[in-house]
Length: 167
Image (cartoon, rainbow, N blue to C red; front, side, top):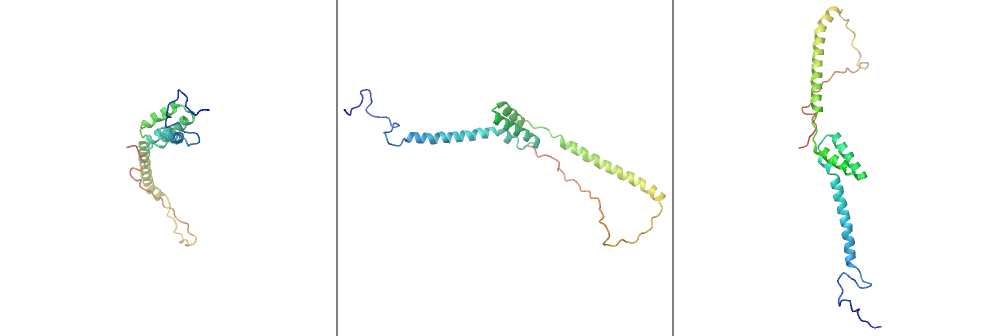
């Protein structure tokens, strides 16, 4: 048999065709490239998928939990409507209704204590006049005495009830 080329063949082969028994460099490079791209696209997909949670990070705890749940549902069901709802919910900043209500409750509690104290002070002189003088008791021994509990009223710290909002 003669060792000649086919008449339709070219005189040289392109560089991506390897001779038998040699390593296919282009194939190895493409395997690494495809694996790297799959990894990077996966990271991009997951980062994009977590975008609503990152946007709502400064929001209230309840809003963040709802957004996280919507994101997980969208991730596992591949239903993009849940992700869009989470994104829109992350963009909306809900007003803080709890702080004014807490402030009102605190003010009402102060007023109620003041009125109760005024009522008690007004009743004490009448009760003292009607009640007989108590007999002095012997001082209790120190081993038998019980601790006395004194009511302690701690002044609230200013701005302790505010939720940190987005900037």
